[in-house]
Length: 356
Image (cartoon, rainbow, N blue to C red; front, top):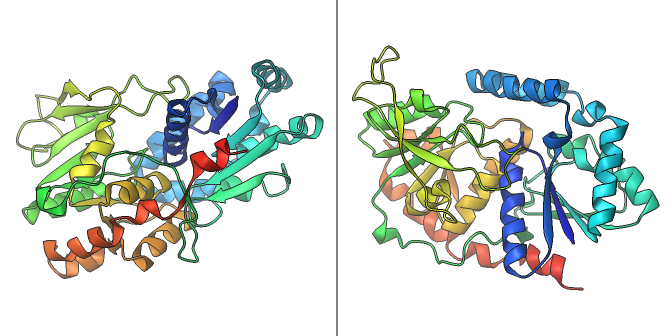
């Protein structure tokens, strides 16, 4: 039994964890997924939801919160910890794969009593905030990295069996989003890109935020990572031709994605570029679709390192650099070509977990 341990407050790590679990099951492994927030008291979980709203209003809240936030493990009751440990024992967990450093603190005492293989997976190029807080816990854990600031991609999680869509078959659309929690400057940048005449697929935080100058999508409001082990489902939404906030005709869902084919990934696969802050999940999408990144303001030093790495490898441009050349489409194809085949170079994390 392999237990994949994630956190729903960081979809850039949660989604790679879900993808890993999916691929492991396809290889015949027995896998369970646990999300940190499922074990929190109701009032603490409500605070998480409210934090998301604040973060969407101003990226500066995100950066500040990384330095000031309390450890969520402080809110775990002894009863919740005991129940979690019984669950692991009853399921016969032989390997833990951790996607949030906060889990290492929870695992520390358990591993002291029941030594169990523990693999800490880092989706960012440097130590992320949750792992920074966990340095002294679970000292025997193996650490694997999907990206390193030294310019290497040591490991990867296989996202797709299909080859990337050829450049000549892409229609020049841009996928614009603010990561899993829809934060940052992406909507302002989307408006600038639309004014430049570029066709956009825009992921908005809620259906009422849809605009007429882009093809809009939003996360299904009924989906929450602490209630559902499925990949985040997108809904396509429509709006009238203006983006006036006082529109009397609110946007509404008009379609759902095909099960097993997450729409956000399909949009990235067919795009000419992803315009986003450089979260770990976005790097993985870029790598496996061979779709260049246009980098927006990062949410913290770990995302800044991700952006530097992607530029160093020739996979990305900053938004300002692309804007300075009037969003010239010919600047994108060399990035796509640099990405082609790059996903085949790192070691496959499935093999690292399933090979004795």
